[in-house]
Image (cartoon, rainbow, N blue to C red; front, side, top):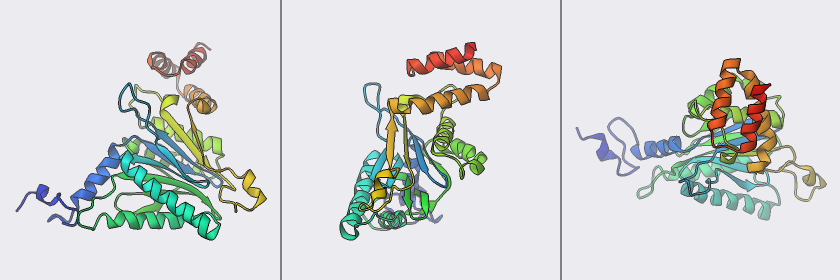
Length: 289
């Protein structure tokens, strides 16, 4: 029998075991990407993503993208594929506003995106998209969180994570799932930061410069002609110093949740971590108290 590697040159050929190797390679690309976490409550949906820099001389890559006032995505995998698909999604959203003068329903967006991705798994000469999305959005039924996979599958979740070491984040999300439904926006963000921290090695701490946070809330999908559109919590992306308040709460909660010996280890790790100086000083002061 021929080796399985002879069946991975084209995505239209099944191996004797019934596998499509090109699709599996695309799924592996998602697993190699930096982590992104999504959560939703009864009122808000939140994305928290870990940014990477290709080298010490480079800026951090963007991990969260705005599609429309009421929809945004966080991705793991190939940035170039994410750029192409996000452009396609923006075109759909703009067409809905121009033709129907209304925001694009997120369920319709996910259906169109899934159809486009699925075609690439069955047409000769094409390859699956090597990127996965967590998509948050608002509609008349409230907030939504969807996962998009290179296979063309889209599923709705209460909480989900993608990327490297995502199982650690999923374990945290499963453990605290009952707390999400009634959580406020700020509480969701803190849960997202804690889940994202689980994807890092034990000797690493979250750095504010390497994290992106985005949220969408009530009224984001309001009719543009309605006065209520001004009060809507449209999709917003926060990075850098904009996260100072949430990181202060995250560090404080993490510090006092640990035992004395663990707090000393955490403080020592913070002093040796090349993170923002004000964060390290704050943790040192808390340790002395």
